[in-house]
Length: 385
Image (tube, rainbow, N blue to C red; front, side, top):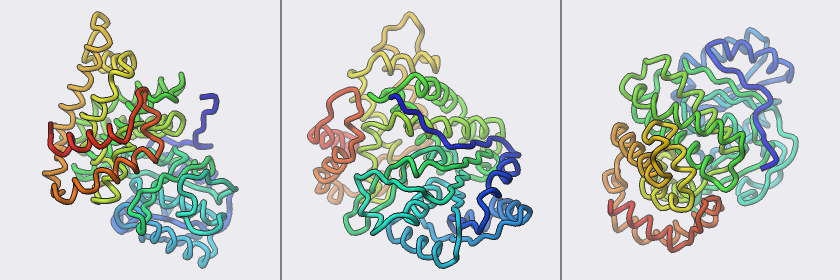
């Protein structure tokens, strides 16, 4: 890949918000804050409001992002953005508010409905976008992607465009301290998926390789620590950096099979994105490995699961075993244990496989992936075989 895109400004650490404010103030005008109900009432939101007030920046809070974002939520937010006369957007929260903020900003200068842009490149000069993550996983603070559910078609739309890359990313791990264990696990495993898929993608580059290896190494070490103790500040900081690295990686080298197959499960069965990724890791990575033994093997050595004396295949399989152990530590359920009934899942396997392939993500795998492959993997994942 010849092109490498990141936010214009990235601020990391417990003074990140204060350091970002002079840059935010340059935009002038009213800020449109996009968040959910929980974060909307949190100390993080109070810090943001205080910082904006201190910089004499008026704001309007839209806290209508409930669960994973839908086209209806974006339409509601867009109408309020225009009605309240705002000039730029701040997303604060997990991946859903951040994705929603990016979508609202893009549609503020776009025509038609957001569903019109599914599969197309979004363009145009958007209002300024500030992304403030309160989870460590999605990496949305650094990507040109946003995932929005089309409720009429029951699909998760992967919308993309350089205009969606936030102008400013504010990454303060203190904002992630009160994440519940389940969210810590799901978002952390999402970040791991980003890093592994970016490193093994056909679109990987020397720059993404460096960040991906560092992110995988950090997550394998620190996710068990923050899952056991959410108040481990040092581990939280490492996870926040790893999530940012993962976001930068997928922004530039994309995702592969896991994400392609994960989105349909989320759209049809409302499984949180990071959790559905985690459910698929064992089978999807196991399927992809023989197309990239060297790449998977390098990750196995990087995390210390194998040595230089081990061949690529041995090192790759050692990596997969460690990822399986991590999923067990994080108590990742099976699709069946999550409550998805067999008579609901099996009839939509073909549709999910078609949607997965149509997303384009499986094509980045260093191995040919067919609709039939996806169907077989869905069966294996559900049956646990």
